[in-house]
Image (cartoon, rainbow, N blue to C red; front, side, top):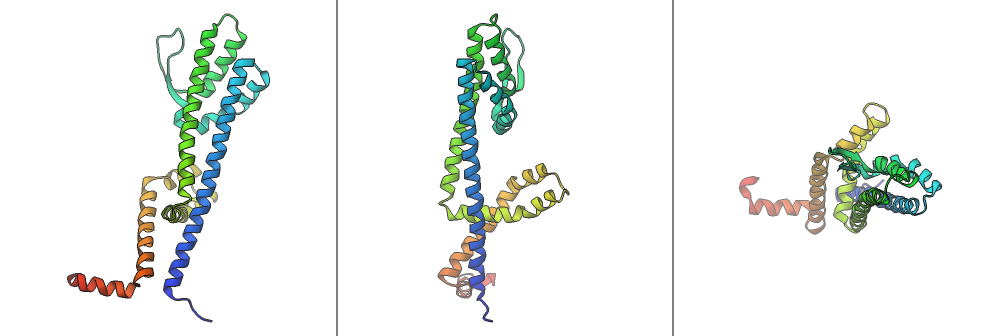
Length: 225
């Protein structure tokens, strides 16, 4: 059975990393598109609830409030000064807290319509900012699909993180820790270095071959060999 030259195996490995990276990037782009669609629907339902005092809209908003708050992350937290109060509330979860306030404004006739407008503007601006962030991230994710260097880096990062996800799936470490480490700067730097080395090696192999490349280096830098 004929054996493949080392160079062929090297290019096959690069192709495999790139294929893994493409799959990861496609999944990431689709996940961002789904988050963007959900954020847009949530914002539309808030408008419907405020304009029509729709009980069905409020029920849907409440059922999905935790999901929306978690999806927004730090963008869903703010420093807030309650109406008629002299203190500030830090790390105020805007969706979870403002949604019940909107309902109070619509059902309690003592509360002014201006207060309803303030709360509506508060949650609407937070959701709008979140949508803008998602639009930028989705645009970046789509552009990455055309970048072979990003394919390779993403594939290598996924392979490097595979042991962490295996340990998390086996219950040896929490999934939150695996996610945090896989998204850390250290993992990104390592993946970037490996990708840079692999990309440079691919060019060298394709253009000159390693033996000829080493011989050139020996002539240029004799003291290094």
